[in-house]
Every structure is written in structure tokens, then in C-alpha cells.
Length: 353
Figure 1 (cartoon, rainbow, N blue to C red):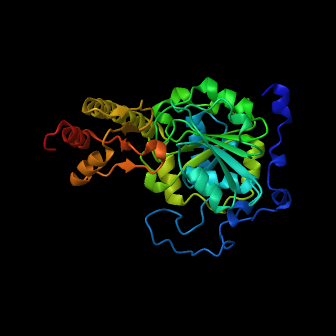
Figure 2: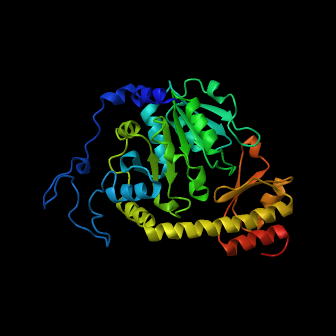
Figure 3: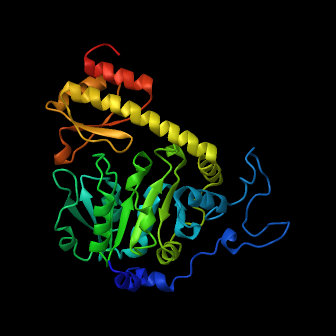
């Protein structure tokens, strides 16, 4: 995408037409106000919790949280939306840009299933293309996506754990100048050098998805982020829920993004990587074909996957198997702590855990 082409990209041309005339719901927090007695939101005046202000509706986009993620990611606060996990961000993009029964998205499998499922639940078509044998983007894909409004690329890819180089991702963004290219970086803390968040100012059709569920150990809190240019952010804010970030989630997330929280995250990522290397080596020694791990998991392919699955069940170890034909002989192992990793390795060494 040349600078001239980038300047011409207007996400309003991709947005659902009815949204351009929509006045978003003005929640009490969006309207705001100043005063000592707040009676504009039908809230209870009684706080029955130790958590301050939990009886009040939270900000739609809590400033402390947005600023904390801005400081961490290096992306301007105005280019960030906090959502209920990256899953909600996926749905928000589809709801904003895809007309049900008319438009479509594109994705590259085997990959995270929620791109296609989210599209299907909104009656949006899915062009499901295949990654190459070494899990890279196929050469001819720009000619195969038709008029897809959104192209989803998971990097690192779930469940394979493989990565596409930053150079190739940038080429992909350039190859689809009339679509929104969404790069899902849910696992980017495990390979930060592959992030394309720094390209947001260069490519207005780029969106980056992030989450605190993986490296930040907050899967139960459901907090994710959409990073995008101002025009896309403004359109998505037309369809977002009035209060997408609960107050306890915002406080947990903001704390996780503090200096101490970031130090904890980086220490734990290093621990998981170390244990993942041990597990990968053990699986390879067992005879599995182990793919390079760039997230907090490894995908291993077995000659007799059924017997391995039975071995895991008998040991009370719950790993992930897949119905995708390309992954029929594979099991995905999430990385865990040293004690549990020891037990898994012992199982594949044939000794008692």
C-alpha cells in the first residue's frame, strides 16, 4: 500500500451503511457531568462491597486502563479500545463492517475458530483459505478472498504455534488495500519481535488484537484490546456496549499493566518458555513431530494419536485435540509450571508421574 493509497483508504466506505446515520446510545458515563449528587443512571446509592464505586456504572473506556495499555503497547490511547477479551473485539469488527447475508470475512486455517464462528452467528460469509504446509500465507490468497471486508491473520497462529514474519505480514496488509487486515496478537508477549503494532500509523487498514488472558494470567477477567486508527475506532465505538469493561476487571487489568505487573508477566513468560522447551524436547524424544513453539503451547503430531490421547486421559491430563483434518493426528499442549511439566514428561518417558 503506497502512501497515496493509504491516504485514500476510508473505513466508512466499508462500514455498514446504517451505522453512518446511527446516534450511539448515550450512557450516563458517556454523557458525564459534574456534581456531588449523582442520580442520572438509576444506580443504587448503596455500596455493599469492599470495592469502591462498584455500585456505580463504570466508564465505557476506563482512562486509567487505556492509558496503562497505551504506555505498555506504545500505541496512542486514542487508538485503543478495551473489550471483553479479544473475542468481543472480533465480533465488534464484524458487526461494524459486515452486512449480514451480504458481506464476508477471510481467514487462514488451521487457526482460531472464533473468526469463522463469530461471522456465522451474524450470517456473514466466511472464505476459509488454507495455510501452506509450513503454515504460511498462501501465495495467491489476495485473489481468492473476493470482496471480503475483513481478513483475519493469527500471529503467532493458534493452534500451530507457528509465526509469519513481520515482513510477510506487512506484505499481506499491502496486498489487501480495500479490506481491513486484522492481526490477532493474543500470544505476542512470547515473541514480541513479531508484533506489527508499530505499523498502525503507516497502514490505516490494519487492526491489531491483544489480550491479557495469556501472558498476563487474566483469562478469567476477560480483558482484551483492539488497536486501530482513529477512523476505525470511531466506527467501532458506535456499536460497542455501554459498559464493556466491568470495574473489577479494569482494576485488575490496570494493576497487571503496572511496572510491577509487567515485571511479573515477563518473569512468568520466561518460566513458561523454559518449561515449554523441556516439554517439546520430551515429546520429540518420544517420537512426536513437534512444531516450533512461539506461544505458550506446542502442537505435536503422533503416529498413533489415539493411544497418546488415551494415555493422557488415564493420567488425568487434559490437552487439546482437533477435528480439523490437517490436525487429526495432533494434540496441543499448553505450557504450565515445573511440577506439572515434570508429570507430563514422566508420562512420555514411560515412568510414573
